[in-house]
Length: 295
Image 1: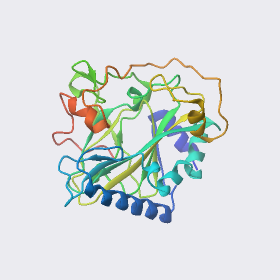
Image 2: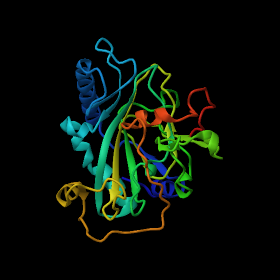
Image 3: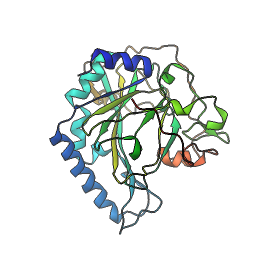
Image 4: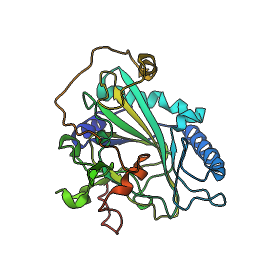
């Protein structure tokens, strides 16, 4: 599923996009599942274990920015965790032994979908090695105008930046304190059914959706089976073993020389990344910026 050029780009840039991994039927199923879960949010007034809501969410106009762990609430999402096309891509990067971590569905409704500030996933959950990645399943067509995921090429080989504000973890980088050219970010665009894969240390974010089309991205986090979390270790070995989606579990962990910053003390607004990032003092996406370069 992953071509040699995809593997090369992932190694060089820290991300790649693979077209046509999911069928039209699978995409249609995810859209239906999403609509059904969002419809049930009309009875919800605040964030809970399923929903992260936009500030102006209401029963009359349900506005959901994230469905948490959708694989727990609908079998159509659960099936994608072990999708053979996705697993084949990860095997091409890491070898045969793959472990799932968690999933979420980030949603940007037409005209008001929230931005996600620049960050590295590694800041949230460092491991003993960095063979970890997020797979983004495009439920809608992704184009520059509807707020796609954007990644700074090559940033996965650089430092792990500070994701704190006022001494507490906030899950975002302060753009005024970092010497980075964010305009170099490349959008991960593609047709529905395509996937993006981005390295756990790659710097990424996404602008608001100002288009007339929705942008729904189902994000699944995976890791090599020999990577052990340095924060939030598994509750039991059985639970850890159940997360294996390919190959064999192992007691032999692989430790590499990777930079680590701990996500401590916890965020003042502990919750989803949207809540964490509320504490960021200087936001990148509050004002219009030049368009990202095309792929």
